[in-house]
Amino acid sequence: MSFPTQRPAAQTVSFRGMNGLRLAADRWWATEPQGTVFLLHGGGQTRHSWHGAGDRLCKAGWNTVSLDARGHGDSEWAADRNYRHDALVGDLLAVIDQVGDGPPVVVGASMGGITGLVAAGEHPGAIRALVLVDIVPRLEKAGVDRISSFMRAAPDGFASLEEVAEAVHAYNPRRKRPATIEGLKKNVRQHENGRWYWHWDPGFMRPVEEMDEPNRALGYDRMMSAARRIDVPTLLIRGRQSDIVSMAGVEELLAAVPSARFVDITGAGHMVAGDDNDVFGAAVVDFINHL
Image 1: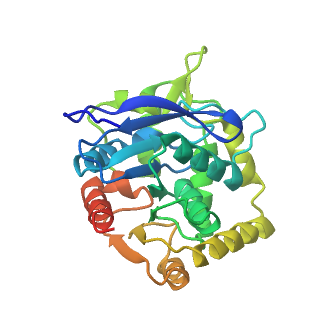
Image 2 (image 1 turned 135 degrees about the vertical axis):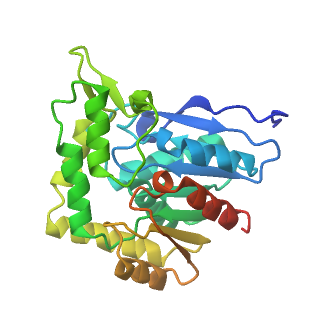
């Protein structure tokens, strides 16, 4: 396979996930690639949350694929509203096979991190290395509930992009406001009624509604079981101000994966890459360049 002599901007491409579901992605090609990195976003986000990271990884010599999860961004919505772990892992494995570049490094934030963790633990050999971004098996309920409340807060959409910007700022006031609100169009879509809605299938929230305490325990048990079977290099990156991942959760994950490295980023919350992309990007590049 030949590669371009100059690094181009990301190219938008399509893959087929489990059962043929169409998945959108951005893809960067490095001039002398060391391998491939997959970037998996969190619930309610899109592939665009990784734009800075994708560009940095490409410059560092890694082909990079930033994938819109099913029901998110420009990927198809699941007709059966199946957004559970098995479907997300199935999509990841299907795309890895289509890229055909051998086991990739998987960098996953929140929901994407769960996907990567389960794939690494339950499918030996599928993944070369794993970076978990503010995600561990034992999540803090208050933080999870705060995210859920935010995602449910505007079922009737927003009258303007300014309203979207205010909602985002209220959720994450530590994040610097963007110079222009036009970038928010990557996270919302405008319907025929003129209102703006989040760029994901509302049916995605169905599994969350079913996460009563018994089901939370089942999710935790599965993730812990997968974590104990991980045999690839692993890095856990936490936002020190995260209300999702506590130090107790970090210590539990590190005990389950004794070879894992840990980085705690001061001044960052759950949205680590967006809160401090420079420190985050440097930590990821340093880790994968020493594989």
